[in-house]
Image 1 (cartoon, rainbow, N blue to C red):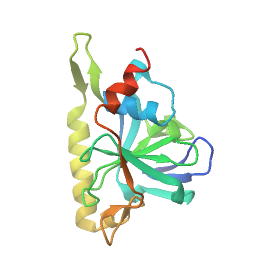
Image 2 (cartoon, rainbow, N blue to C red):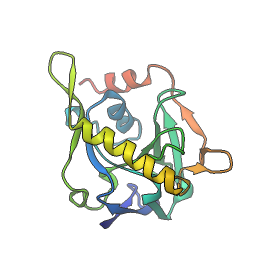
Image 3 (cartoon, rainbow, N blue to C red):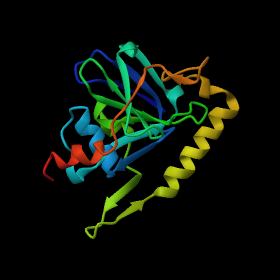
Length: 191
């Protein structure tokens, strides 16, 4: 399994995604992922979706800039979205509970996104009638559950750069964005 470097836009945050193949390359078209990109200053992906490599936190290590991580959420119980405070770049997604080991690395931060392999799962694909559909969700869900189970049993869930293990809280204070921020961000694009 290959190791792939990643970095924020300005290069202050740099690290390595280990063992590519122990994860799932996914593309998400949901409004929350789109709004997160807009919020962090990345270009509006529109209907192109956001590509994320889903793995476990023990596969992510930092060489520089770990202290530059900031985290926000679109609600008090929603997914945590990690960004580089130095340049604002969207970097990772995690769940709020470290014992359920999950981390998604934004593929745009990887030096060579092709190294992540082909997209295996697509979620929230717009259908044109206001609804959405999914492709490969069995792969995504089974993979997430299986990887989280394995690292829970072998204790590797404790190898996380995102949480303080004494308190089980994120290493940075979570900024909870106001209700309706997702819709506001998307509306401002005019698309």
